[in-house]
Length: 134
Image (tube, rainbow, N blue to C red; front, side, top):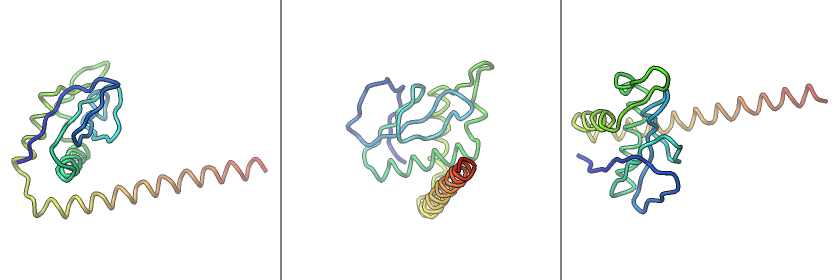
């Protein structure tokens, strides 16, 4: 099992250990991030390899909507740090390293493909604007 620490991120704080962030407010609560936002938790881990593993595990949990059950609040939805820890710990108990590596590689490829498609769509919009302005 991976050892990690999770705490609330404070703006301006820097971290020496490998880390990533988890969004804690909004309908995307539980989303893993490499860059901090005002409302997020920071997860620190011992090695970069463990960070990548836990980052993509968190991504898959958010995509699979495992955090949605724990989102509270009517005006501003949020997830608590304890609920986030519980979801991650439950996922880590069911973690099988052999199967997970192949899933992480597939998820990385899909993420790269998705970012490429977003770039293509942005380029198409820019092309439409250029045609209409000429």
